Picture 1 (cartoon, one colour):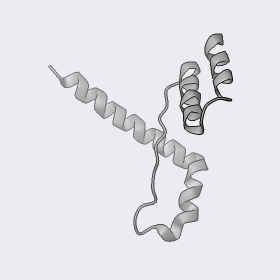
Picture 2: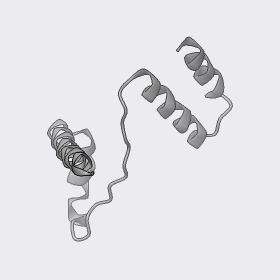
Picture 3: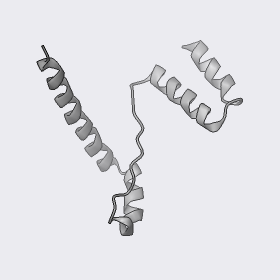
Picture 4: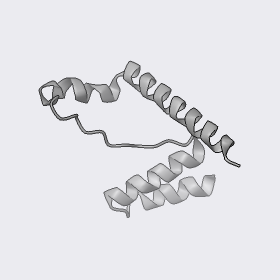
Length: 85
């Protein structure tokens, strides 16, 4: 893991922002749990709630609700996978 960290530090000075983000993601996944990053656009018709929408990103209750949704989805996927012959 030490080599990965060293590689990451050396490369962050030479990489473009998108390359840096990809290297950072790989590093974080190597030392921690897997994660995904998704872009969520404000739903049509809710533009008047833009500030509230943007605040969801840091809202802990919202994050917990999303985690619960992911757990439910993965349980469904697991059940579907286990039923296959």
